[in-house]
Image 1 (cartoon, helix red, strand yellow):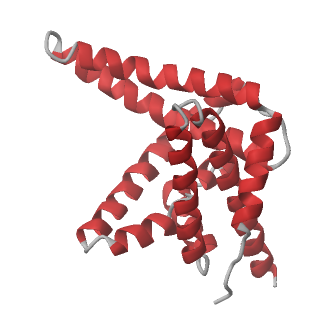
Image 2 (image 1 turned 90 degrees about the horizontal axis):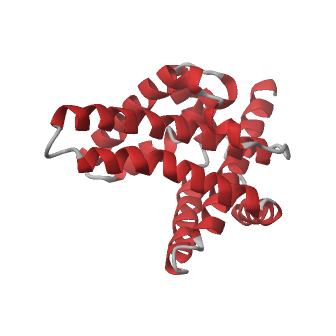
Amino acid sequence: MATKKFSKGEAIRFGWNTMKNNLGFFIGLLIVAGLITIIPTFLQLVTQGDAPGLSFILSIVSGVLQLIIEMGMIKIALKFADNTKAELGDLFSCIPLLPKYMVASILYGLIVLGGIILLIIPGIIWGIKFYFFGYFIVDQGAGPIEALKRSSSITMGAKWDLFLFGLLIIGINILGLLALVIGLFATIPTSMVAIAFVYRKLLAQAEVATVA
């Protein structure tokens, strides 16, 4: 089994430089994405007591919007990782992929939950192993099972580095949170682009290995 390598520092630097060069876009993106996900959640909580039926509908709407925004964020991050300009409209460009993404998200959640029940460590390993399922759906239109399998393939031999990279990403965003929360407008875009950068690196290595 070939060990896949990527530079954590290179990924973070790429994400940071991309964020700095497109800061205005990312601030607008995070505000729009935040409003889209927060407003339905707020309305759901407000109506919970007086209108439980409406609150239930709003909770479903909120969940669906969350998945759409997640896909849009992946799409935008991949564009920047490919040195291509993104647009706010990209947030909604993956709506046709929603059924695939929804099913894969449920499967991913069940897999990770099962691993956590098995003394936590398997949950962390499986969480890393299948993490990039959404990228394969957004990037290549893969089906749920195929996306999970392909994520498993590209993360093979790279799980320890991905674990450390994940801790680094968490640490960066904690710093952003501590910086009066405003820092998140810098750390979240840095993180999402850096993760997409790593996905591209691992995918390229897997494709080279397949050809070889």
